[in-house]
Length: 440
Image (cartoon, rainbow, N blue to C red):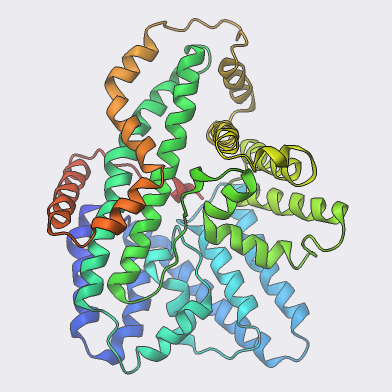
């Protein structure tokens, strides 16, 4: 199931929230577990059993780890099993919905809970909580632990939480369905034409379009996940903090997909020694992190090229004079946007040859047998200018500031209703796409 399906919006979510609100308090945790299984079942029924087996197996391993004195060997085996299955899925092209997020969630739980003896219902509720099940954010068990205790005596769903969550959910859905999905049409047109059929200006338009689309698609989902957390009374961390306002690639990655970056920092980079064992080890540890980051996103050369670009610029920022540019406001912002836009091209184009040709096109280098239409750029701008302008606006700090300033105003409720209605219209017309990170 997806957050942007009619069945979810008008059947699953209202019934789920109502059940949490009116059924006896003792059923709240059971509803968290059932909600995850039902949410997954609507999307991939045949894999629900596999999901249940994974939770049961990992709970058994967790309890085994918690009892033994020498935990490290068994913990390594447990992490290896989960990571190995993820790699195998990517090699075989067998990608159950949200497998990368789910696997990382389970691994972090096993590491964090190695010294605790958690109950099966707590473990399952954490693993299967549906707002973050298939696309994150990655939540730490410590963020849920107090809520598990609280829900024994207190109902977590509140009317204020539902109201606040609905507004935030609507904002995320609007970004995804109305702006990102319509920009996807432009990017697909440019991508289908390929480097042989586009001019340099259209190539840059495509790169910028994809940059906007990816951000609003994933930020939209993450906002909806936070909103669902508010509705259900369970904390879901924010995953973005105005990343395109950054002045360096390192800062960008700390503000983009925050929970994934924190996961690699806490469970890979720091255990390897972080930056405290000299320059060579620091660079080596960063290289390992970025290779794993590329593989996590997909089993393709383009993802390694993408992660390699980010790794290279992070190292240059740390150890060369390039770092000075990132301290100059304005110049640092332009540098960051240029690097990130180019990196997303590598992220988007899977064929190495097509990626090379597209890069040539971006920099005006002739592509063999190219025959681009010279009127494309004007035609695309005339058709999509308002979506591009809206997307660029959403990438600035202004939307967050305006939301904070005016969210309590009565007219914001009217605006939110209009945004919700327009989003539902697009979904009903079949104009919405799957979330882009569903592929991971």
